[in-house]
Length: 112
Length: 108
Image (cartoon, rainbow over all chains, first blue to last red):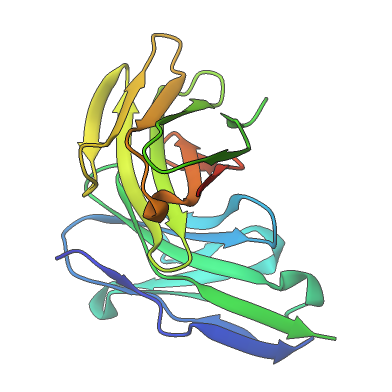
């Protein structure tokens, strides 16, 4: 079955620390990959997406993600987090169709 | 460019009632998808409409239904509400999925 796994459920960091959130998906042919962020009390916002081309994707707010096809992974990174990055982060995969399958999310808390 | 608009933002219903939620996608976008977000189940796909046709459907019971109008606005309906239907219902516009702020449904 098609599935998306986010292994880190809750991550706590201090400001300026580096961030990497894991995302793995099950094999299913052509995939489009997404990372979304949901700030407290706000709606989902698209951070970045990968459809094809350069596997290193740069998004908004200094985030980037790398698509490693051989590992079925699409990990999210940020070199130096800020308190304002406190939010929940969702990885999502679209297999061949427009239907998105979401991971369970990772709650990130950044302390000053 | 206006974003995705969902109404109502909040509503409270009792078990057995039915509810209709509305979503207006970004102007010019013809695809609308609906998702249910709960603390326990996360984000789950409900259905997707394109040009008034349901193109995809998730694994939800028949109590959950939807439709799309010629102006791309979409509605979803949940009949015979159950406590477990309490959730944030999100609507998304286009393949890149610009999400609305959601309709938070509480079933008492």
